[in-house]
Length: 157
Image (cartoon, rainbow, N blue to C red; front, side):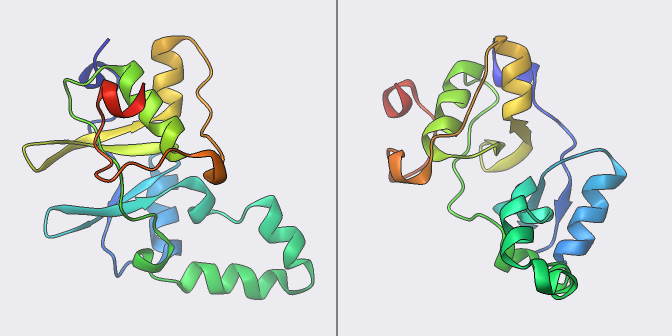
């Protein structure tokens, strides 16, 4: 199965200057859990769900100042909250290759780019449904860091 068969062709996109609150609202409006940060047709990074919403760890760490933590996160620009140096896949890559790349890089969503143009976004949920198996990102200390972040069977096997 190929990426183009399961990817989201209408991902949520926001400007690097958009606030995290604006990105979250855009994602919520369409039932998405992630947003791509785009500037001049270039993918700058991804706001994954842990960057759009406070995690349980954030809540525990800031329980006394929860309102301040929420306010601070909401007003932060997307550029500051996104994950940059984003790996990507192409429409013709296999879903298995894309899933391996996400596991190796610890990502839960990656952009689909062909010939420099954004085609969509692929999430671990879409890979899981297509492959019928769990896809779990590897913790950062265990990741195999690759220079370019592009998917290939050599890079992720």
